[in-house]
Length: 136
Image (spheres, rainbow, N blue to C red):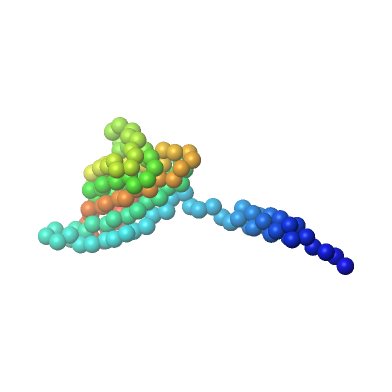
């Protein structure tokens, strides 16, 4: 007869759970959630889109532009932002960054190598237009 120790069973279960946790795919470096899109009253053909963007440590985006007036509000963490020809800025919670429709956004990344960062982005744009356009 084989007897099983409760401590041995608990240790085996803990090892199995840890192994399963390590085999899970990592979360994406950037998660974007559109919070709201709404037409602008008094501005036919225009709309506002609000997006929450969460970035993992060190995550960023490739150069891009927004055919929109774009306002970035930092909710959590620190982010680095720069438009072509402008200074590199490091922003923390409560700080704001603006991009005009003609700006090329060359740096947009989480400034931390260890902590996440979350921003709220407000786009004022043509109705139905994409919020982000890649730059090659």
